[in-house]
Length: 527
Image (cartoon, rainbow, N blue to C red; front, side, top):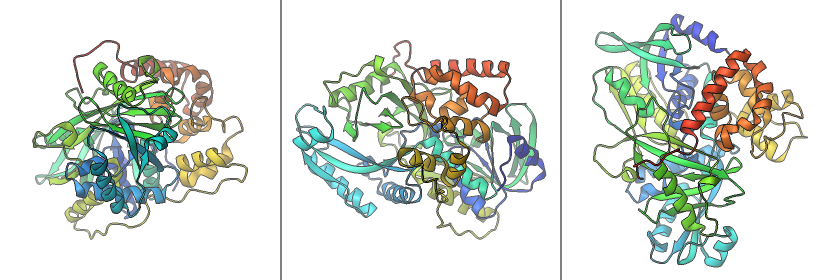
């Protein structure tokens, strides 16, 4: 399908008879758009910020089955997640990569070898594979040199998967638009349109211009994640979500060079923590805290969370002595968890909820890994409201990646296929030798910046550097040391004047300082 500009899409809003309006441009909303578009429905997705701006660009980047949920008795959640993980690795192997994990077995530490191996046996059985094994302390030293927690006696190895979460969202949106769906960022739902006591559409506002547009739709799906209660409140519904914050650190790979992902139970409170190689750096996560902050303000890591995560690393690698000066960047996201039982954050349920309230179908909770199943549950409810038959699709979410010119191979070819799927050859053929080079210190190609600026709905500089590419969290100072070349590549594609670029740069610098850098002062919060 022909690529439409943002303005072309806006021009269609009021003149199209929409079957479905999806509110929320994270992975849940993207999944709904993908599944609805393949059914031939006239479907529109709107996002009040940028695509994946919320939880879906600030996750732990893991496509996993939820091994720790077995301990909480959430077998159904784990089973569904494991099956979807396997499916995604088959469909998009370059984007969803297998990742080996190592869990150190230490005398006197929970959960202990036999209990952990029992969990891994169940985990592998659900996946129909046998990826786990126990290894001696000598083997641990070979797999992860320097790993030396107190009373180490061996280790358990198992497999999960990782991805670029924001890119996953974008790939799903692209597949949906290819099938006729429309996705628009920086377009907010403001006022419900009620007909005969039921929701019949929304008044939308273009955040960039302030223009308001009334959009009629046969059904509306609320896929706003942690913000879902706000939309429900416009219909007088009571809150049901418990926002939980998860914070992460990024350090240079040379400072924490782990080929294996390392997982552990934090020595302070027994919570699961991990660190693993990601996009040429090492990612450390995650905390799990009740988040009381304003959801319209980007979440930020606290001083206590920084200490907590560094403590976990130094417990496993005592000789490294990782410190604050080693941190390149940090980020925090808020997860939507449905939990009415008052459980501890780590034991709160991770299954999703779908409900119909006056024609507003809310889809919230759940996990990144199970986005396809979540979308199908929401559409089954929407189809009932529209009196349409509904049969969940068994077709792949992703189109096959295109073949590349023979001179492109190895890491570069995998990168292009992961980022662009069926458009990989097109991107390669329009690149130059200079743009098919890696940004120093990262796995990011310069071509990714230019391509994103040209055709990937970039409205602000942070869209480009924090979500279309991840340079803002992979490099110190948000990647500003490469600003001269970034500007030369991207400003002409964006069509920004010098004054516009400078305003965007100031906005971006403030964002990096406030929300992606270490906190300047100690806070009272504790993980």
